[in-house]
Amino acid sequence: MEFTKSLREQMEEDEERNLAPYAMKSKFTRGRKHKEENHPYRTHFQRDRDRIIHSTAFRRLEYKTQVFVNHEGDHYRTRLTHTIEVAQISRSIARAMRLNEDLAEAIALAHDLGHTPFGHSGEETLNQIMKDYGGFEHNRQGLRVVDWLEEKYPQFPGLNLTYEVREGIIKHETTYDKPKTEEFQPEVSPTLECQVVSIADEIAFHSHDVDDGLRSEVITEDELSETKLWKNLYREMVKENPDLTSDQKQSQMVRLMIDWMVTDVISETKKRLEKEKINSADDVRSKAERIFSFSSEMKDLKNELKDFLFMKLYRHYRMIRMADKARRIINSLFGVYFDNPNQLPPHFKEKMEKDQKMQVICDYIAGMTDRFALQEYKKLFDPFERV
Image (cartoon, rainbow, N blue to C red; front, side, top):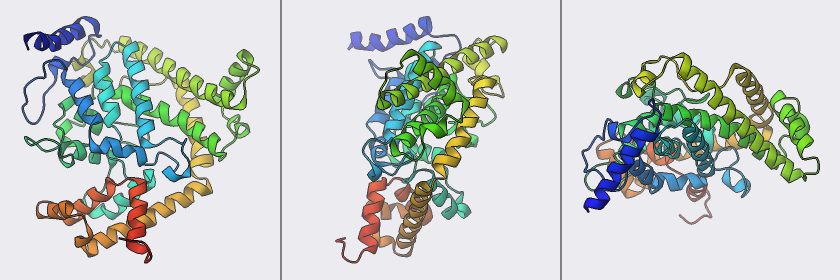
């Protein structure tokens, strides 16, 4: 046991030697809500990563919508494949910047655990239903999942993750994410590893929504050529590889988009670290603005692409139909459970002894996969469906 115990200590020493001075080192974690013995051969953040991967909420991401509902096709992104892609991009950037890859990966793997079925339309619907009860926001729900709703251990509720991973969940920030909570000092910037994941999430969903949009034929290459980002990369790709098939062109374009944005982020962030004289993790936290950023040129290109996707993909009539269907399903399920809580599974109904009825129903629906929500809707509303 002495040998394995020293293995964790050796990894912590390796972090001290090899990581940048502004990286978050495992041994300096602010700890867990419930005290535990250190693991003999895993660092704190490695342990968090493993707990997230083995959680029920993580497995459910396989059947939760990214853009296209699961039954639309086998090759579209789901929350799970998106999460894996965000984790990969996060690790690549963290490695290039000499940050803590384990912490970045753990945050990335947990960043979508609080998502509802049916993507953002599901979240908007639950937020409207819960408006008089604090609303609904998927990062806050993700924190609730890892703090309370996962039931794995006899010693404590939730997964008992470290402060830094929990902070990374609640301070995950993109165009669609602006959560705040007093527990994590909203005025203080999070670790660079948290900031990496927020950037990686944007890179992943912009590039992969393009890929899924093309695959579905909702958008076309001709339409995309109206954006400068696509036009510039396409010209470069065809010049270097003139004989590619259509599928190869699409795959290469997604690869180039990711590579170009990642390279830009690394270059710009290194300049900002030097300009702001960042020499420690505390220096990172002291800055009002986040250090990780795209260059101004890339922001303009990215925003043009984002506007294009909003108008051509997210507002396409097929997406509108899916969103409207999602609202009807979630509103109907919530109404049935609220009117008669006896239709909830017994272990959820029992939670009403401690939590508000609205919160328990919200937790139950938010945890559903698209597939389960559709099946539940059929059982409750189709008179010929077995219950």
